[in-house]
Image 1 (cartoon, helix red, strand yellow):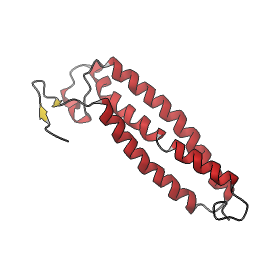
Image 2 (cartoon, one colour):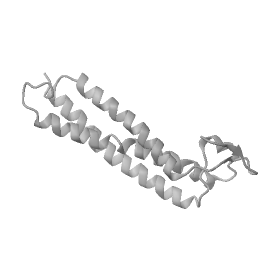
Image 3 (cartoon, one colour):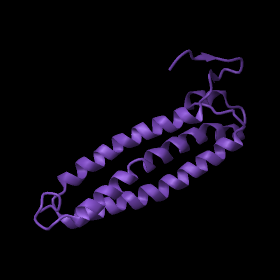
Image 4 (tube, helix red, strand yellow):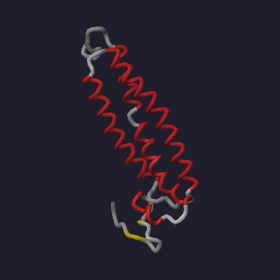
Length: 138
């Protein structure tokens, strides 16, 4: 994490950077993709597997996109004053809370978008599998 100290206004420095927030969200999302893969192979019924993968793809794409775009908009509105949740006590005005919400929304949006290609690809494999194969299910 490097050197982290409190500045004159009591806020942790250095400020959050977009690249770091995106990378952490993607790392969490890859962990979620592993959980989706494990959950798919625990489910035995073919229709249930397909439904789970379709729902994961659709809901992840929809909510992830909305949260990511909202977070990026708030990030742009924050004029480089991006704060960590630990800095909540240093906020003095209601509009400064936007600086707290922006990185959280970006991270959650990327977290939800990361498993989408995995779920979509696995859904296509399950749908095209031959009946009776291990990928088809019971």
